[in-house]
Amino acid sequence: MRDPYSVLGVKKNADPDEIKAAWRTKAKTVHPDHNQGDPSATSRFAEIGQAYEVLKDPARRKRYDQAAEMQQTIMQQRNAQREAAERAKAAKANAEKVMEELARTEAQRAQSQGQARQGQAQQGQAQQNQAQPGQAQQNQAKPGQPQNQSAGVETPEDVIERIFGAEGREQNRANTSSAQPAADETADAAKAEQNGERPPLPAKAVELIASLMRRFRGTAPMPEKAPDLSVDAPVTIEDLMKQNSITVKFADEREVRFPIEKGMTDGHVVRLKGQGLKINGMKQGDLNITLKLARDSRYRVDGFDLHVDLPISLQDAVLGSEMTVETPDGNRAVTVPAWSGSDQTVRLEGLGLPNGAGGRGDLVVELRIILWEKPDEKVTDLMRHMRHGLYV
Image (cartoon, rainbow, N blue to C red):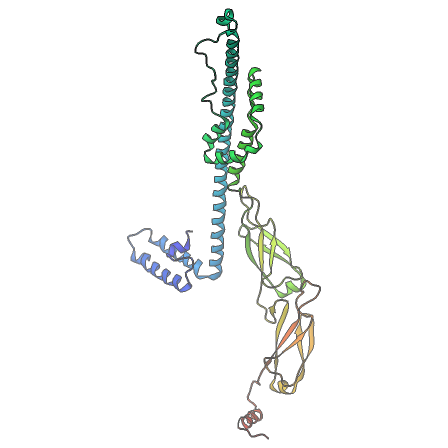
């Protein structure tokens, strides 16, 4: 179904009254009886009803919000993964282009430097021939022969800056200290050119390309793990006392079973690694299970303590008494002190839930004064005398 908030036209933080009012307005507007000429009125009316059913129930609304948030996170991670793959592909293509152009540039540089050295040698020979006039015409350089053809040939730095732009220029400056000496690189290139081999790329250029690839690929890390999944698991006091195993069922019919351990109580979160969402291309997320204690007719839970009510009569509250209370370990005797009110408690140590530290919480007995089912004339007369200050 579509987003129920959009269907009803309310914001995600709308309160129940706003949701109910929006549903009534929408339902009246699209009701099939009022739109008999619209064939889509019935489906739209049903959609509005389904949206209201989801949002009016706090539990269903919470589950929908969690699922929607999780779906949005998954889409964001998939987009980030796709963008990172595109950047890596572009960076690889640029790197290959740089490698090809650098190889061509190095060959041109080696050729130009070889011709320059040849021209310098001819000039030196011509100077020697000036002292020997007979040989001047034989050894003089030919007119118009280039003396240095290296001018206009791009350097590796020029190629990288042209392809990678400012990013390449900044990275090139950062890597200048690790560059191989230019004389060694030129000599290697010239030697390879003479042997008919492809000239080697400068070490500085290779390092620069590697640095740029690392930077481009590292701008958006690839998503590795799917979002965690959070669910509630109903448990009973008996489950906590006996450390029973609990089974959580999912909509895809998958089941996850885990044991209750000492130290777990209402609201405790159990984290199961690798038991969450399954998404292709991503590591399975974790499963976070929150223990939700089911309502118990006898006890209330406060941390590891159990609370129980003990009804006492008026005379037992005034005079004190020996009573019996039901505990998880069987019936136990409880001494009610004389003159006890309903705000007093009796604590039985070590009869609560296992606390994970080798011990147990306490059983807290809360006293509740209960009157007789039928009025007692003697008690009523006594209370009347006490109210008016007449004591017998």
